[in-house]
Image (cartoon, rainbow, N blue to C red; front, side):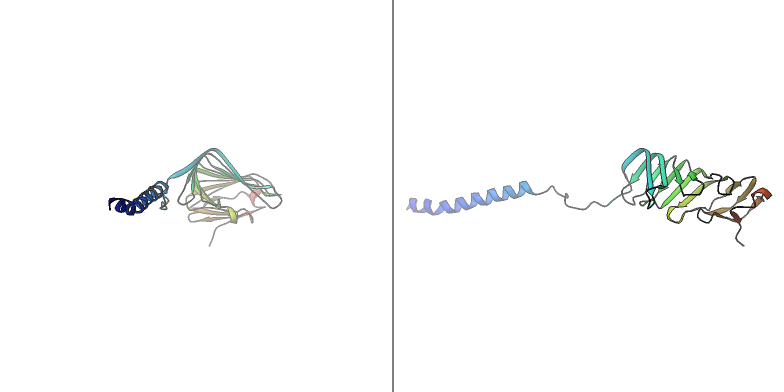
Length: 202
């Protein structure tokens, strides 16, 4: 009788042992708690770069724009980057080089908008019938795809011997038209009246 009971219990013991081993293997292969959860992105730096430089090429392979900075901090949530001592240069065949600089800056994820802050300056080299042009402000926004530079801050513009101040500015590097907004003051030298144009919206 005892031998019959022992024999009938052996399958149950084996099944229990198998179940225990299976549970242990399952627990050993499970990921740690919360590992599978998607962590929301936060506005924290996810990488840095020193002496940063990136160029955009045209269809022929020539450099169209080059953005450089002494230091770059990239943020994971919005893909924006903070820049230290940024410089953006625009190269166009047959046209003067335009350089935009600032103490600090910000560039969006696809590098289509570059903001320059603190001692911001736009410098267009002389050429193609135009004298040198320099604009100074506390903020310039460069719309790279449109080839437009604008500011809503007070700006001082020097074009050759002409000096102008205004409450804001929009410069189109394709048409070379400069629009000044708000309280516009200054004088345009006769020698600067040819090539390019200065406009004040009416």
